[in-house]
Structures are given as structure tokens and as C-alpha cells.
Length: 116
Image (cartoon, rainbow, N blue to C red; front, top):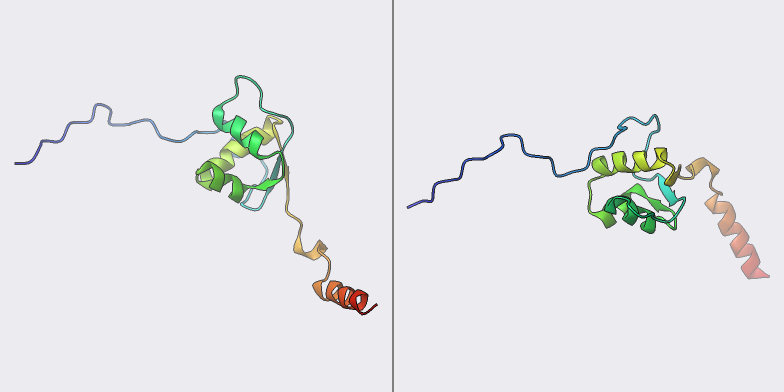
């Protein structure tokens, strides 16, 4: 004998994620964008905001924050964009590969110094 299923009270339940106020902040944030806190958490902040600020005392990428918070990057993009717009976080683009030093040149300098 099977137990009858309960009827849902609300056909449209609340979503289990936070929705940001500004989904298109004009800036493109991706998984390798670095974030740094501009100040410490303040009283009355949302728990997610406060924990992201504590986490970002040192630069962290969106991928790292997503892993620590256990939130999907699609949700975190809105949260971080709102925090940047509010002045809580500073976003930094990752260093482009073209501006990094040439690895072969660094190896040649290292080998030259070792021979001294």
C-alpha cells in the first residue's frame, strides 16, 4: 500500500538563491576576475556579504569564492557585481598573458646566474 502524496500548498515556491538588484552592471565578470575587500564587514550586512568580505582580505578569484561559498558562479556573479557597485569590493582583471615575462628569457637568466 502506498502513501498518498501531499498536495503542494504553493504552486510557485520561493527560489533558493539570492537575486541581485543589478544583473547587468555594465562590467564583465568571469571566473578569473580577482576581488579584494575595500573594508571589513559592517554590522547589519547580509551573512553572504560579510563572509565574502572576510574571505577577500587577499585577492581571490570568482572561482575560488564560488568554491568556498558553495554557490554556483551564475548566482555569485550577481552578488559580486552588486558588492562592487556598492563599493564593498574592488574587482581586478587578471593579468593578460601578453604582459607576463617571457619564460624562456627568465630560464636563460636563471641558468646564467647559476653558472656564476
